[in-house]
Length: 325
Image (cartoon, rainbow, N blue to C red; front, side, top):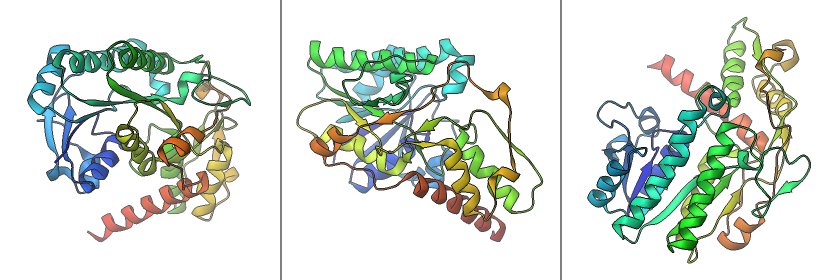
């Protein structure tokens, strides 16, 4: 039985990845700063909480990481930990850099120091590219990050590449473009939109206040993207991959589909507030995921419209179930 350690198991991707690995017969360990008091709400929602071996590990502390590796001795490590909000990174740049960049470095160094044959996956981000305009980004596109989050993810990417080349570690980074699911917290704009639309559809008189809705992103479905993470570690040669749908849409299109799914016109319920605009917001992002298809056989099946409508349907179903019980 293979053993996998997921750092950041409590988040959206961590929970879906844990479920995927359990279905593949893995023994799954979930890392958290304090596993004794964390709620692991997403694991409970996926009904897998009792199947996970939880361990307390602080990736900002090298000794904590090394002790965990020597105790668990995993075959694979998935690093999904760290501050995950682009918007929050402008308010907490130091915490963002430390949790992402220093955390990644500690895991890499612990793998090297332990000399264990561990395969390592690092969660990268399209935010590394910055604003590429209409240019379609691939794995060779230069990084020009425009947020503290993007800077931290870019640093972590190069750390992984350096350890792979200098120390021959089996380490790779998945450069994931935006991916959503019902497990997204409401601090993410997609879930904020879905939650508001569902409440309005049930009679709420609220107005949804948003920032720049003309930004354009490549939105995918998180449960599909975690499969790409796993596939990267099964490949005979460690490498970096862009994971995306290859289709870009404006946020206003996402809003429209969400409100149409609940039978409403979005223009009647949304207000734009310019104070919500970010100082260096990326206007649009375009991705070329061809390498993932050619090398890993991975392709996104969910379109942005599928993602938006599925998030609404899941939320409406969950709220109905809660009322019944």
